[in-house]
Length: 250
Image (cartoon, rainbow, N blue to C red):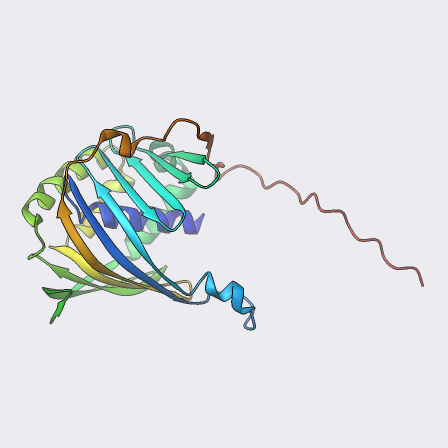
């Protein structure tokens, strides 16, 4: 549940940083090891945590799409539905953010996160990926990090307009309104972010950004996919079906 709540927070951070009809790529470098994992893990397992990949993002006024590795995420702003697609086996899980917002456990968890989230502007500045950026410090119960923000990114004024629209959409649920309001304190596009969460560090750097016009089908689940609901956070865990090993006879 905490991972899902944190994913929602990061998702909303991203929504505060884009505008209509835009495509951008980031290079994400992840390193470290999740908390609680054994120290001497096989090299093959460590590679899944320590990797560099390009993330492709598509934003229109109606929807958002992100492609990372073999996973595709789509969010419809009007319906507040999120779809996680696995193109390899043509499966999809869907999640209704309105239901998530009305879930007492999730709402409480996100409130705890947003109450503990602190966004602090600094006087530090530097050039990142060709943009003059200003540094913001972020800290909270799930981790800490820094955002290098720039107003020079093309489409910043359009971003402001979309931010207001997104807050209006999210305003139907206080859980999202408060969070987007807090994140909105950062003025500019996040050219580079560095977040340390649960033992892992992810550095995301803007690679390219351009205005485009997208086909509406880009934000729909393709035909032929098997769609299922994401398991409820309140659903009881199923007991393991693995057979118990019988003790060896003396």
